[in-house]
Length: 492
Image (cartoon, rainbow, N blue to C red):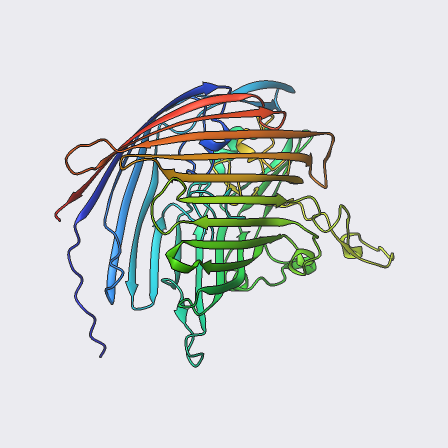
């Protein structure tokens, strides 16, 4: 019988945050509303957040953590267009975030190199800088987490018989989406669809060369999918429903995507090929990292037939605090999508035309399932405008053929004062299914100051952000957000 070490009683970490902000327009500016796990989305906010939990002990054979995180308060409303089938008329449908919600509720156990996690928690990119990057293409920090069960390796682990030269890290999860009512409340009920009760699964597998060397290469793939549920389809006044299988057999098939009915793959699947080259500079001068995330929605993207599409980035991190602690510059391109045309003879009954064109990838959108978003915010990169902003009530991505750049810089000005600056530009041409007659664009920037008052315990942080959007993609917005955060460790 295997004897497990006893679990220690860990001290509790308490964090209380107050967010107060205001601005022009319906929604917070891009650099305030993005990459905060869906906490702040509206123009005006007064929110209180309380977190309580413990943290994993990295050097223990058997360790655990748990957490509960609740957000409550007030946020302003936005009007969404809604079609009334009884009267045949349109009206303004005013909606706001819930006055209170559970942001995180989870537990996790680590044993040796493995972990098991159950619940809902904030998601982060496994490879990119979550503070400065524009965001991971598949699983970043832009939306609320999904309640899920996840298992995998707790960090990179050496592969046997490679003498430490090859390390592996991987995770797999199954979860249930909880935002179908949120979508239904904002859906236009005219030309759109809502899938209720859909399942979500995510997995990634990365290989890395020997981490003790100055130069390391990491490569692999991440995959996310929706399956199961029931879709209600609205087409110009006509309403119909479609039920999708979501039993044990489908769970097994989604482990490695397999064919469903009519020669299609089961569910809705997307992902990215990820490549990272990391170099530790001599004399402990910091690190340089170059990376590429190449998105795919179909086999053409998996086969690199979508041209230059992807997130191309360069990151610098200093080894110690200074005027510049870190900097990121990224170029993002989603304009190829394997070409604008998708044609498969099997889509059309009795079609005898030869040939096959596997284009029109339509990133983050799906004809049957909800857009790749949770509570309106993209679960991948926020660089593509999320469905939350579509006040016409169309709950899909309306601009995924987008090209632009993003920069981020953070630093330390003194012992108690820091800063962060972010900016970017993007231009959009609609989607391959619905291209725009006239392109839209956006220029966004944000300046953030971080102050740590000289109080006993140094456990108070004050953060102030000012941000602005200019252009036709998000409109002209301006906003500010003040956050006061108090941390306390109980029992240490």
